[in-house]
Length: 200
Image (cartoon, rainbow, N blue to C red; front, side):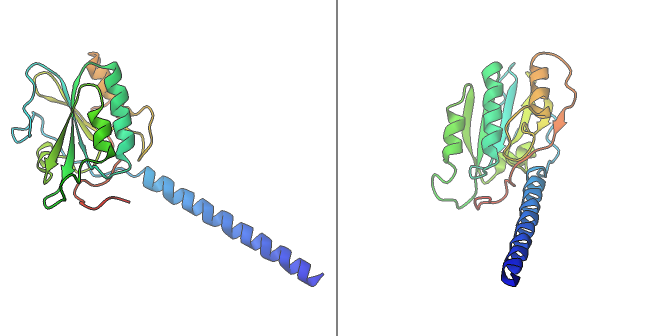
C-alpha cells in the first residue's frame, strides 16, 4: 500500500512538473515570436547608394532578407500574396557577407523569391544595400512611390514566422489603391541582418 501511494505521488509530481515546463516553454516561444527586430530610420527618398536605380514613374517594393533566417519564409509568403493581387515591381535583396562562401546566399528562400511574380532577386554584397535602405532586420519591407518617395517602412507579418494578415501588408495594399493607410510603419519580425551565421 505504501509503495502504491508513493508511486501515485511521484506520478502526480512528475505530471505537474511536466505541465509547468511545457507552459514555460510555450510562453518563451510566444515571447520570441512576438518580439520585433530592430527598425532603423529608412531614407525618405530612394537612396543613391542602392544597387539598382528606382524605375522612373513606377512604385517599387524592396525587401531586405537574410537567406538563412527561418522567419523570412513567412515574410516571403506574405510578399507573394501581395504581389499576386497588385501590379507593383519588387526587389528582394539577400545578404551576402564579406568572405562568405560562393552561393552562401542562394538558399531555398532565394529560389522562392526568384519564382515570384514581378520580383527581382539580388545578392546584397557585405550588406551595402541594407545600410543604404536603413534595414537591420530580415523581412524589412520598404515601399517607394512612383516619384521615389518613401511611403511605408516595416514588416508584413504579424509575428516571427507567422503568415496571415498584418498591419504592414494592409498599409501597402491601401497605398497601392490610392487610399490613406492607418499607419506608415509596422514592426518587423525577423533575424538580424548583420549575422553571417545561420540564425537559430
